[in-house]
Image 1 (tube, rainbow, N blue to C red):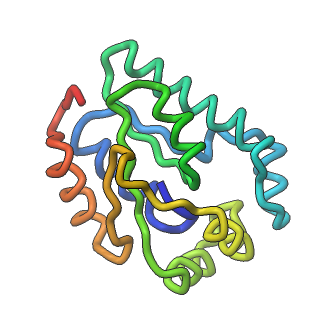
Image 2 (cartoon, rainbow, N blue to C red):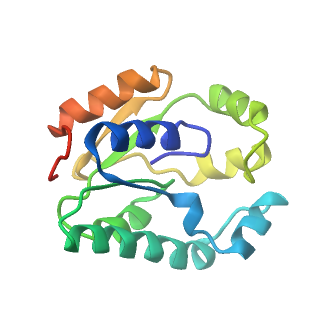
Length: 165
């Protein structure tokens, strides 16, 4: 979880490749109208996020019901959004990739293959609620190398190849 450009997709792909877990990119669950809205500089609101989060939670629930481990990259900026995802099962844990606005802004400015414009970053930081102490998960510094982040996540959660977690 984290703001756009924090490295969620990269780290999630590394985790999935090292564990054999199913992988989903949260952006793939957005309605076309939501992507169009963001592409022109309008942030999503709770009304537009609700069906998106529900679709991701359904995907997670389906994986869990099939006994499959899963990794999904998703901004999940607020506790309420994370609560929707955690409703998919008690084993859902969050990894917040947190770091300085300036670095993420540089990353977004250099990225040309994504619908999220850099001007929306401030709106994401404005609503971002870091993980609370009672939320299952960890917060890591997004400035670390993605391979290091993936290894730290795997070790923290005791995950390995073909994990059942």
